Amino acid sequence: KAYRADFVHALEHDIKPAFGNSNDEVEYMSNGIIKWGMPVNRVLEVGDMLIAEAQSSDRTPLVKFLLEGSVGSGKTALAVQIAKNADFPFIKICSTRNMIGFHESAKCQSIKKIFDDAYKSPLSCIILDDIERLLGIKSQIISLQGHMLLIIATTSWKDALQEIGILNVFRTKVHVSSITSSEHLINVVENIDAFTSNEVEQLKKNTTGKSLCIGIKDLLELIRRVKPMEENQRIVKFLCLLEEEGGLEP
Ligand code: ATP
Ligand code: MG
Image 1: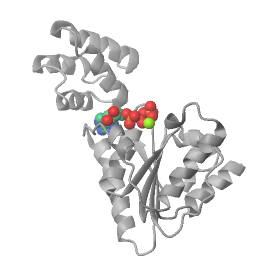
Image 2: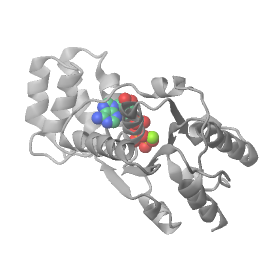
Image 3: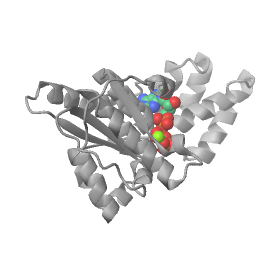
Protein backbone atom coordinates (compact mmCIF):
# COMPACT_ATOMS: atom_id res chain seq x y z
CA LYS A 1 0.00 0.00 0.00
CA ALA A 2 2.97 2.29 0.48
CA TYR A 3 3.55 1.94 -3.22
CA ARG A 4 0.06 3.04 -3.89
CA ALA A 5 0.44 6.18 -1.81
CA ASP A 6 3.65 7.11 -3.59
CA PHE A 7 2.19 6.34 -6.89
CA VAL A 8 -0.93 8.38 -6.35
CA HIS A 9 1.19 11.19 -4.97
CA ALA A 10 3.37 11.11 -8.04
CA LEU A 11 0.35 11.22 -10.31
CA GLU A 12 -1.29 14.00 -8.35
CA HIS A 13 1.68 16.24 -7.68
CA ASP A 14 4.67 15.34 -9.76
CA ILE A 15 6.28 17.29 -12.55
CA LYS A 16 8.76 20.05 -13.07
CA PRO A 17 9.90 21.42 -16.44
CA ALA A 18 12.97 20.70 -18.56
CA PHE A 19 13.81 20.66 -22.21
CA GLY A 20 14.66 17.66 -24.14
CA ASN A 21 13.10 15.70 -26.80
CA SER A 22 13.74 12.04 -27.03
CA ASN A 23 10.97 10.95 -29.26
CA ASP A 24 12.88 8.26 -31.11
CA GLU A 25 11.17 5.48 -29.25
CA VAL A 26 7.85 7.17 -29.86
CA GLU A 27 8.55 7.14 -33.58
CA TYR A 28 9.63 3.56 -33.32
CA MET A 29 6.53 2.48 -31.48
CA SER A 30 4.01 4.12 -33.75
CA ASN A 31 3.53 1.99 -36.80
CA GLY A 32 0.32 3.68 -37.62
CA ILE A 33 -3.29 3.25 -36.73
CA ILE A 34 -5.77 1.57 -39.03
CA LYS A 35 -9.19 3.13 -38.62
CA TRP A 36 -11.12 -0.11 -38.80
CA GLY A 37 -14.28 1.16 -37.15
CA MET A 38 -16.05 3.47 -34.75
CA PRO A 39 -14.36 2.04 -31.64
CA VAL A 40 -11.00 3.31 -32.90
CA ASN A 41 -12.34 6.73 -33.80
CA ARG A 42 -13.97 7.00 -30.41
CA VAL A 43 -10.71 6.39 -28.53
CA LEU A 44 -8.87 8.97 -30.63
CA GLU A 45 -11.69 11.48 -30.21
CA VAL A 46 -11.70 11.15 -26.44
CA GLY A 47 -7.94 11.67 -26.46
CA ASP A 48 -8.15 14.77 -28.64
CA MET A 49 -10.96 16.15 -26.53
CA LEU A 50 -9.00 15.77 -23.30
CA ILE A 51 -5.98 17.44 -24.82
CA ALA A 52 -8.03 20.34 -26.17
CA GLU A 53 -9.70 20.71 -22.81
CA ALA A 54 -6.36 20.72 -21.01
CA GLN A 55 -4.80 23.20 -23.42
CA SER A 56 -7.65 25.65 -23.08
CA SER A 57 -7.78 25.45 -19.31
CA ASP A 58 -6.35 28.40 -17.37
CA ARG A 59 -5.30 26.27 -14.45
CA THR A 60 -2.21 24.17 -15.05
CA PRO A 61 -3.76 20.95 -16.03
CA LEU A 62 -2.85 17.44 -15.21
CA VAL A 63 -4.69 15.06 -17.43
CA LYS A 64 -4.80 11.42 -16.50
CA PHE A 65 -6.19 9.06 -18.99
CA LEU A 66 -6.41 5.28 -18.96
CA LEU A 67 -6.71 3.03 -21.98
CA GLU A 68 -7.82 -0.42 -20.97
CA GLY A 69 -8.42 -3.41 -23.16
CA SER A 70 -7.42 -6.99 -23.88
CA VAL A 71 -3.89 -8.05 -24.60
CA GLY A 72 -3.02 -7.02 -28.12
CA SER A 73 -6.02 -4.76 -28.64
CA GLY A 74 -3.80 -1.83 -29.62
CA LYS A 75 -3.54 0.14 -26.37
CA THR A 76 0.10 1.15 -26.64
CA ALA A 77 -0.18 2.23 -30.27
CA LEU A 78 -3.27 4.30 -29.49
CA ALA A 79 -1.62 5.90 -26.47
CA VAL A 80 1.33 6.87 -28.65
CA GLN A 81 -0.96 8.21 -31.36
CA ILE A 82 -2.88 10.37 -28.88
CA ALA A 83 0.38 11.70 -27.46
CA LYS A 84 1.60 12.51 -30.96
CA ASN A 85 -1.64 14.30 -31.76
CA ALA A 86 -1.07 16.48 -28.71
CA ASP A 87 2.22 17.50 -30.25
CA PHE A 88 3.99 17.99 -26.96
CA PRO A 89 7.73 18.71 -27.01
CA PHE A 90 8.34 15.92 -24.53
CA ILE A 91 6.87 12.47 -24.90
CA LYS A 92 8.29 9.57 -23.04
CA ILE A 93 7.23 5.97 -22.76
CA CYS A 94 7.66 4.37 -19.40
CA SER A 95 7.55 0.65 -19.94
CA THR A 96 9.06 -2.38 -18.24
CA ARG A 97 9.87 -3.60 -21.73
CA ASN A 98 12.70 -1.09 -21.77
CA MET A 99 13.90 -2.33 -18.41
CA ILE A 100 14.39 -6.02 -19.00
CA GLY A 101 17.18 -7.30 -16.80
CA PHE A 102 17.13 -4.23 -14.56
CA HIS A 103 17.17 -4.66 -10.82
CA GLU A 104 14.33 -3.05 -8.92
CA SER A 105 16.51 -0.11 -7.99
CA ALA A 106 17.57 0.46 -11.58
CA LYS A 107 13.91 0.35 -12.64
CA CYS A 108 13.14 2.99 -10.06
CA GLN A 109 15.99 5.13 -11.26
CA SER A 110 14.88 4.83 -14.81
CA ILE A 111 11.30 5.80 -13.97
CA LYS A 112 12.48 8.64 -11.80
CA LYS A 113 14.61 9.94 -14.63
CA ILE A 114 11.64 10.00 -16.96
CA PHE A 115 9.67 12.07 -14.46
CA ASP A 116 12.67 14.33 -13.80
CA ASP A 117 13.08 14.98 -17.50
CA ALA A 118 9.38 15.64 -17.96
CA TYR A 119 9.67 18.12 -15.13
CA LYS A 120 12.04 20.22 -17.23
CA SER A 121 9.56 20.69 -20.06
CA PRO A 122 6.53 22.94 -19.75
CA LEU A 123 4.43 20.53 -21.74
CA SER A 124 5.04 16.90 -21.26
CA CYS A 125 3.42 13.62 -21.86
CA ILE A 126 4.34 10.40 -20.16
CA ILE A 127 2.92 7.11 -21.28
CA LEU A 128 2.79 4.58 -18.46
CA ASP A 129 2.59 1.43 -20.50
CA ASP A 130 1.11 -1.62 -18.79
CA ILE A 131 0.80 0.43 -15.67
CA GLU A 132 0.07 -2.56 -13.46
CA ARG A 133 3.65 -3.68 -14.01
CA LEU A 134 5.04 -0.35 -12.93
CA LEU A 135 3.29 -0.43 -9.60
CA GLY A 136 5.57 -2.85 -7.80
CA ILE A 137 8.30 -0.35 -8.33
CA LYS A 138 8.60 2.20 -5.62
CA SER A 139 7.44 5.27 -7.35
CA GLN A 140 8.93 8.57 -8.25
CA ILE A 141 9.07 11.08 -5.45
CA ILE A 142 8.77 14.21 -7.49
CA SER A 143 6.18 16.90 -7.38
CA LEU A 144 4.03 17.35 -10.45
CA GLN A 145 2.86 20.94 -10.18
CA GLY A 146 2.97 23.90 -12.44
CA HIS A 147 3.19 22.15 -15.75
CA MET A 148 0.92 20.77 -18.25
CA LEU A 149 1.29 17.10 -17.99
CA LEU A 150 -0.54 14.47 -19.85
CA ILE A 151 -0.39 11.02 -18.41
CA ILE A 152 -1.71 8.25 -20.57
CA ALA A 153 -1.66 4.84 -18.97
CA THR A 154 -2.46 1.51 -20.52
CA THR A 155 -3.50 -1.76 -18.95
CA SER A 156 -4.83 -5.18 -19.91
CA TRP A 157 -5.57 -5.85 -16.29
CA LYS A 158 -8.13 -3.38 -15.09
CA ASP A 159 -9.11 -5.54 -12.12
CA ALA A 160 -5.60 -5.31 -10.72
CA LEU A 161 -5.79 -1.52 -10.79
CA GLN A 162 -9.13 -1.67 -9.04
CA GLU A 163 -7.64 -3.90 -6.38
CA ILE A 164 -4.69 -1.68 -5.61
CA GLY A 165 -7.00 1.27 -5.65
CA ILE A 166 -5.51 3.32 -8.43
CA LEU A 167 -8.22 2.84 -11.00
CA ASN A 168 -9.99 5.98 -9.80
CA VAL A 169 -6.87 8.07 -10.15
CA PHE A 170 -7.90 8.15 -13.78
CA ARG A 171 -10.80 10.44 -14.35
CA THR A 172 -11.17 9.27 -17.90
CA LYS A 173 -11.06 5.64 -18.85
CA VAL A 174 -11.58 4.39 -22.34
CA HIS A 175 -12.00 0.85 -23.49
CA VAL A 176 -9.86 -0.32 -26.39
CA SER A 177 -11.90 -2.83 -28.32
CA SER A 178 -10.84 -6.01 -30.00
CA ILE A 179 -12.20 -6.82 -33.41
CA THR A 180 -15.45 -8.71 -33.09
CA SER A 181 -17.20 -8.39 -36.40
CA SER A 182 -16.59 -9.51 -39.94
CA GLU A 183 -17.12 -5.96 -41.12
CA HIS A 184 -14.28 -4.63 -38.99
CA LEU A 185 -12.03 -7.53 -39.93
CA ILE A 186 -12.65 -6.79 -43.60
CA ASN A 187 -11.91 -3.11 -43.03
CA VAL A 188 -8.48 -4.07 -41.71
CA VAL A 189 -7.55 -6.39 -44.56
CA GLU A 190 -8.80 -3.93 -47.15
CA ASN A 191 -6.98 -1.06 -45.50
CA ILE A 192 -3.63 -2.79 -45.80
CA ASP A 193 -4.37 -4.48 -49.13
CA ALA A 194 -3.58 -7.83 -47.63
CA PHE A 195 -5.54 -10.01 -50.04
CA THR A 196 -6.99 -9.98 -53.54
CA SER A 197 -10.61 -8.99 -54.02
CA ASN A 198 -11.59 -12.62 -54.60
CA GLU A 199 -9.96 -13.56 -51.35
CA VAL A 200 -11.75 -10.76 -49.55
CA GLU A 201 -15.05 -12.10 -50.87
CA GLN A 202 -14.16 -15.58 -49.64
CA LEU A 203 -13.26 -14.14 -46.27
CA LYS A 204 -16.53 -12.23 -46.06
CA LYS A 205 -18.53 -15.34 -46.85
CA ASN A 206 -16.79 -17.31 -44.13
CA THR A 207 -16.92 -14.74 -41.37
CA THR A 208 -20.18 -12.82 -41.80
CA GLY A 209 -22.51 -13.37 -38.88
CA LYS A 210 -20.00 -15.45 -36.95
CA SER A 211 -18.63 -14.57 -33.57
CA LEU A 212 -15.05 -13.47 -33.51
CA CYS A 213 -12.67 -11.80 -31.10
CA ILE A 214 -9.13 -10.81 -31.94
CA GLY A 215 -6.91 -7.87 -31.08
CA ILE A 216 -5.50 -5.80 -33.92
CA LYS A 217 -1.96 -6.80 -32.97
CA ASP A 218 -2.65 -10.51 -33.31
CA LEU A 219 -4.72 -9.99 -36.43
CA LEU A 220 -1.88 -8.15 -38.16
CA GLU A 221 0.46 -10.94 -37.09
CA LEU A 222 -1.82 -13.61 -38.61
CA ILE A 223 -1.95 -11.66 -41.84
CA ARG A 224 1.84 -11.45 -41.91
CA ARG A 225 2.06 -15.19 -41.44
CA VAL A 226 -0.19 -16.14 -44.34
CA LYS A 227 0.88 -13.35 -46.67
CA PRO A 228 3.75 -15.26 -48.34
CA MET A 229 1.55 -18.28 -49.05
CA GLU A 230 0.02 -19.10 -52.41
CA GLU A 231 -3.24 -17.37 -53.12
CA ASN A 232 -5.37 -20.48 -53.38
CA GLN A 233 -4.46 -21.52 -49.82
CA ARG A 234 -4.12 -18.24 -48.05
CA ILE A 235 -7.70 -17.70 -46.95
CA VAL A 236 -8.21 -21.31 -45.86
CA LYS A 237 -5.08 -21.11 -43.73
CA PHE A 238 -6.03 -17.68 -42.47
CA LEU A 239 -9.48 -18.93 -41.40
CA CYS A 240 -7.87 -21.88 -39.58
CA LEU A 241 -5.58 -19.53 -37.69
CA LEU A 242 -8.50 -17.26 -36.89
CA GLU A 243 -10.40 -20.21 -35.43
CA GLU A 244 -7.42 -21.17 -33.31
CA GLU A 245 -6.34 -17.76 -32.18
CA GLY A 246 -9.13 -15.38 -32.93
CA GLY A 247 -12.07 -17.21 -31.49
CA LEU A 248 -13.76 -17.46 -34.87
CA GLU A 249 -16.57 -19.97 -34.57
CA PRO A 250 -15.95 -22.83 -37.00
P1 ATP B 1 -0.05 -5.59 -25.42
O1 ATP B 1 -1.33 -6.01 -24.71
O2 ATP B 1 0.78 -6.76 -25.83
O3 ATP B 1 0.68 -4.52 -24.72
P2 ATP B 1 -1.25 -3.59 -27.08
O4 ATP B 1 -2.71 -3.68 -26.79
O5 ATP B 1 -0.49 -2.51 -26.43
O6 ATP B 1 -0.55 -5.00 -26.82
P3 ATP B 1 0.04 -2.67 -29.44
O7 ATP B 1 1.37 -3.04 -28.94
O8 ATP B 1 -0.34 -1.24 -29.45
O9 ATP B 1 -1.10 -3.48 -28.67
O10 ATP B 1 -0.08 -3.29 -30.90
C1 ATP B 1 -1.00 -2.86 -31.86
C2 ATP B 1 -0.37 -2.96 -33.23
O11 ATP B 1 -1.37 -2.80 -34.21
C3 ATP B 1 0.66 -1.88 -33.49
O12 ATP B 1 1.67 -2.42 -34.30
C4 ATP B 1 -0.13 -0.81 -34.25
O13 ATP B 1 0.69 -0.06 -35.13
C5 ATP B 1 -1.10 -1.65 -35.03
N1 ATP B 1 -2.39 -1.00 -35.27
C6 ATP B 1 -2.98 -0.85 -36.46
N2 ATP B 1 -4.18 -0.29 -36.33
C7 ATP B 1 -4.38 -0.05 -35.05
C8 ATP B 1 -5.46 0.50 -34.30
N3 ATP B 1 -6.60 0.90 -34.88
N4 ATP B 1 -5.33 0.59 -32.97
C9 ATP B 1 -4.20 0.16 -32.38
N5 ATP B 1 -3.16 -0.39 -33.01
C10 ATP B 1 -3.23 -0.50 -34.34
MG1 MG C 1 0.98 -2.54 -24.99
